[in-house]
Image 1: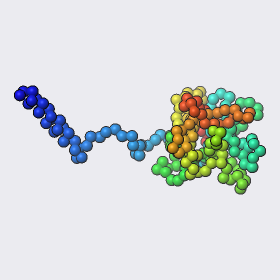
Image 2: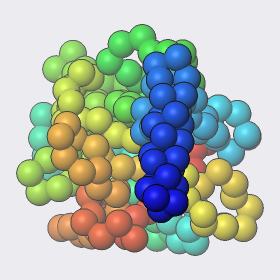
Image 3: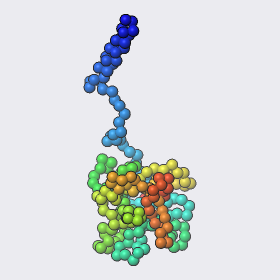
Image 4: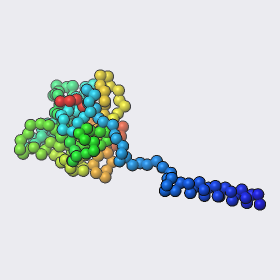
Length: 215
């Protein structure tokens, strides 16, 4: 009888505990919803947030590397190769300015934030024929080229902070290509046909570090 009484008391206590957490007193469980999460800003080398529509040089800060630039290496009507300067005579240069743009207005305003979708567009003088050939994309060979479209879900890039410590540099990031419904891939580099090309890489530990310098 004593055992029955104790079991009954425990059951009633559990019922009372459960009833105390009705819709009027809900248990707040952890959530993965990030609708109200404000992601950190991306910063340039002056310590200022990157802004949509402003011009920047994207530079690999490692010794011997350099800035990203646009060039025509295939005798095409429009230049479309996204290359990286290096500390050797044929690849020296200051880089081609880029702008970060969005498909539409965003709650983030004009600030670029970590791991948010942006399109990357070269800011360069061009002809009427090539005016729409300045947005970055990734082709079938996994090379970063131009010819993308703002609004195309497969031409989205994102910026992620790294833990790399490089002398004289701060705010070191990596770029990711994040096509719709597919896993993001890091942007790395590879020599292809004698040119230092930007490419997507499968290994999540393999990437080029980048810093952003106001142009």
